[in-house]
Image (cartoon, rainbow, N blue to C red; front, side):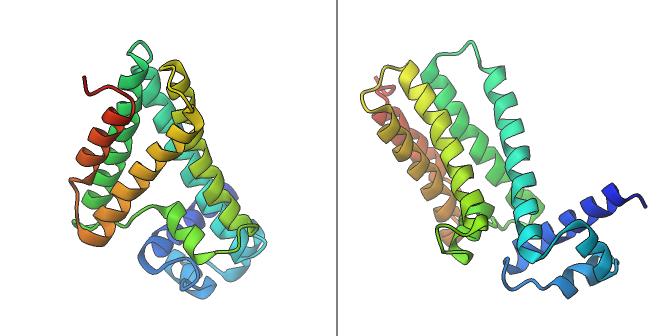
Length: 194
C-alpha cells in the first residue's frame, strides 16, 4: 500500500473513531489497531496525535467547503436570499446524511466537538474549528451584503448561530426539524418572509 493511501487509511480510521469516541478519548493505539498498521506508520505521517486531529479536521473542512461551493455555484443565478437558504439546506443535508450513516443518530458538528475538547482559544485544534465557523460566517456576510442588509457581519454571526443551534438541537434532543425553524427565523431576519 502506498504511503499516501496509508495516510488516508489513518485519517479515515481516526475520523471514524473520533466521531464515535471523541478526540481526547481515542488513543493512538486504538487508531493503529483498528487501521491494522504499526504505530511507526502513523508517526511517519503525523508528528503526534494533535497533528492527526488537525489533519482530520482540515480534510473535513476542505470536503465540506468544496461541496458547499458546488452547491452555491448551482444556485449562482438565484437571488442572494435564496442562496442563504441554500446554505441552510446544505447543512441540513449534511445532518441527514450523518443520521443515515450512523443508524439514525446525528453525531453533531465535528468542529464544535473539537472546540469543546480543546478549549484553549489558541490551541491549534481549536483554531481549526474557529476557522471553519468563521468561513461559514464569511459566506453569510457576503450574501448579506448582496441583500444590502444593515450590519451584514452581525447578521452573518446570527445565521451561524441558527445553524449551530439546529445542529445542537438535533444531536442533543433528536430534533431533526430544527433546521425548518432555523430557516424560518433566517427568512424573517433577512426580510424574505414577505
